[in-house]
Length: 89
Ligand SMILES: Cc1cc2nc3c(=O)[nH]c(=O)nc-3n(C[C@H](O)[C@H](O)[C@H](O)COP(=O)(O)O)c2cc1C
Image (tube, rainbow, N blue to C red; front, side):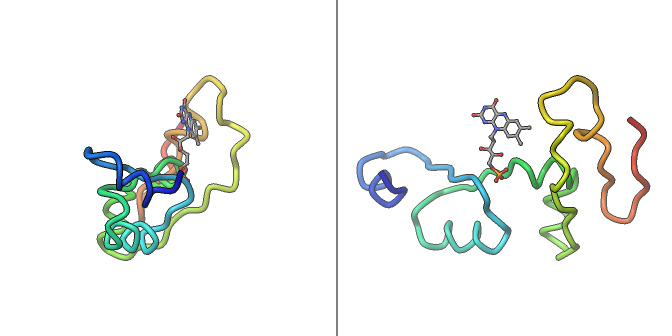
């Protein structure tokens, strides 16, 4: 079922996700297919994701996923905000 088809039968708010960028998220919301877009991986590597979107700051890429599903903060809370130093693990 596509989001368009889902929209036709579901009266509640629809949240899309997986692989969106700021541009594709805004396009999807503007199309009326969804009400919101959730971000996963971009938020891990960009703790200030909303501010980066707001100001057009560059995004850190999520190309290092070997810490996912492991214990400890490394790889989760060790990405810096724009223009700041890398936080200690
Ligand atoms: C480290 C990590 C853990 C995740 N854990 C879950 C989970 O427990 N349950 C779930 O439904 N989705 C989980 N997801 C998937 C995210 O909710 C989301 O669907 C996915 O990251 C795709 O969105 P994105 O392209 O913005 O990252 C996880 C994603 C990541 C990166």
